[in-house]
Length: 309
Ligand SMILES: NC(=O)c1ccc[n+]([C@@H]2O[C@H](COP(=O)([O-])OP(=O)(O)OC[C@H]3O[C@@H](n4cnc5c(N)ncnc54)[C@H](OP(=O)(O)O)[C@@H]3O)[C@@H](O)[C@H]2O)c1
Image (cartoon, rainbow, N blue to C red):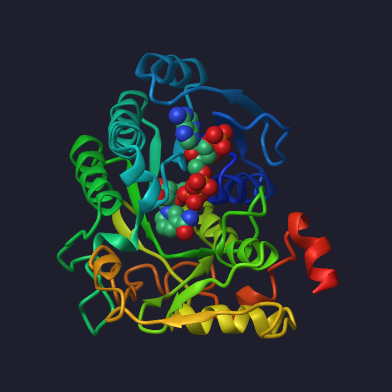
């Protein structure tokens, strides 16, 4: 399959390219600021995807069988810092990709987030649960879902993803990499004891995305996550233990939502996802957090600190 991949240098995009290449697909990867070579791609192109004309030309030139959208402003804080850029990448881009996918009859895989929910439910959120975004990033994801599925209902899958773990290209994007960044800089990360997340690795999510493209019988909004819903504090402690780091060299400050009401008002408390209808139907395994830990590598940028810690 010829796949046009946006965000090929990002956490998910890079993992997707590896996975798709392993399965024999031809991936044309789009990057923006990333300059180094990338594995997993048949070819790499540089483009600013806020430029709709450039994007249209790229799609018409490559005429892909599938488009996979991993470009985004993927951090709530970055969306708040530059709402216009975030709107262009998180809303206008997927909407335009949906129009193009419809035009060239290409499948479209778009990524949304568990953060479309407000996190007040005690049960796992199903694909039918009402969305209630608490921050700008989440509102943009909700808007993108609506636009993608009204524009290209016969071609699009939107995958709501959880907090992502694993190994990124930069070594600075994922769950354990961010902890390493803080610890190596002498900082004490603050981690909520009452904020629950159900992470999966970017590689596992990528495997699922390839599987969904290959089986070609799924449309609409679907959920994916790992097997374990744990507090951010538990996740961090398990990462520290896995890497055999001491409490002195890798400190954590346990915090609660009650003690940080302003920040907490923009952060969903408990995000667990019901993985129906994909669970039990797809071949991609739902990974336990223990299985995820086994895949984490020491990020190269923090190796010197790690071996001296
Ligand atoms: N990370 C998570 O924990 C998480 C959780 C749930 C859902 N998601 C969703 O999954 C998707 C992928 O997230 P991610 O974490 O992989 O993102 P990421 O690592 O931050 O990567 C973002 C990508 O977007 C590209 N990009 C940014 N501005 C661009 C522009 N103007 N033109 C073209 N490309 C541009 C970047 O390219 P350059 O590097 O070349 O500039 C990079 O490849 C997003 O939709 C995100 O919302 C992520």
